[in-house]
Length: 147
Image 1 (tube, rainbow, N blue to C red):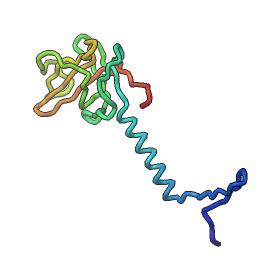
Image 2 (cartoon, helix red, strand yellow):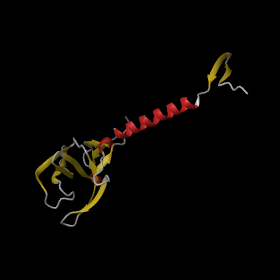
Image 3 (spheres, one colour):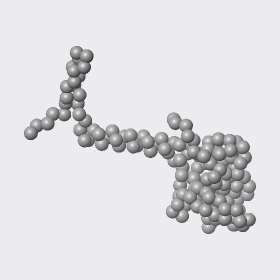
Image 4 (cartoon, rainbow, N blue to C red):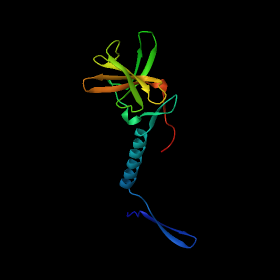
């Protein structure tokens, strides 16, 4: 049995040839759409909840000790749910780095503030040449606008 992957359609007196896509073509297009979706997700802005200043993007989400999100309690008893980010250009780092009460062994920390409104967004951690931001997830919001 020989199958044709073309069909003919006559509409308003014109002949149109419709060609059915092969499985390979469908897979290629599906793969491309998924890649574009992932790229858009990676470019999704993460903003300061207070002033909507761009802090970072989803592409800079990182893991520390095997996970992105962590829950810690400070010495005053306040609980913080933080997420780790490798870059946060919308933050300014304030204060002299300290190891006192660090949540990440071997890493010193400084306070990280929104560079626009100075809201406390979390902490910048560093150890030797390694560094990351631990940002308070409740103080961030994802940008909902489409690019």
